[in-house]
Length: 251
Image 1 (cartoon, rainbow, N blue to C red):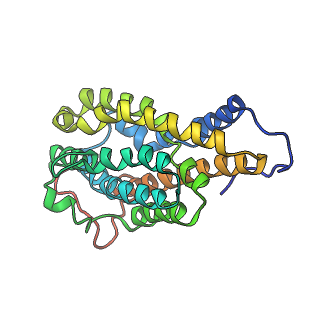
Image 2 (cartoon, one colour):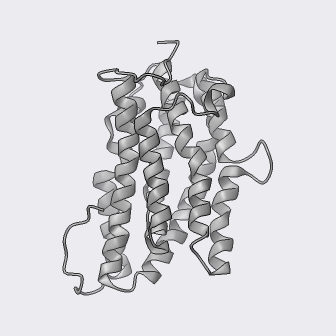
């Protein structure tokens, strides 16, 4: 983790100060600033580039319930597990054909892909795989506090999702039938973020633990940024698609 060196015996941050530190991480490091997202929101991506993004991002989406299952296994508190398992239902649904993962497949279909291309993840970029797998490893190998903190990018996601939906309707109307995923996250993400922040603010009882929370958010932001770096390099500039990765059939 890349959090700045501090005296771990320093005074404990208040909840407001901790929230401000986390917000500062989001302002400077969250992937809303990535050039790929800036191009997307300006309407400068081709259909093929959007397809590549949807397919590669599916690998991340499909691993979120796995990440949350790893996190659940760390807790001995039934109340926490009951609250957190909502996230798995949000993504997997409570039966086939529902949930955020299925909704993401429908977004990919709206871009012009078919689900047989998307679900196996065979065309996913190596860089995206490494980044997403690093997120799973972060959750698996860290304390429950750090694992929960790594989800705090949801503090910033609602604004990005709202902007993305507006710009997709404006610039990429063919994607409109696939926007259900984002519509659901407009309410799910803030609820999840509130729970996670309350948890870390309550359970980070030393300054060292608070800095670990901030470091976990920094690490997660780096993982999200790395995913977009790989997509941008392969499909925008310079456009070097590695062997075995998805090759768009349309411009």
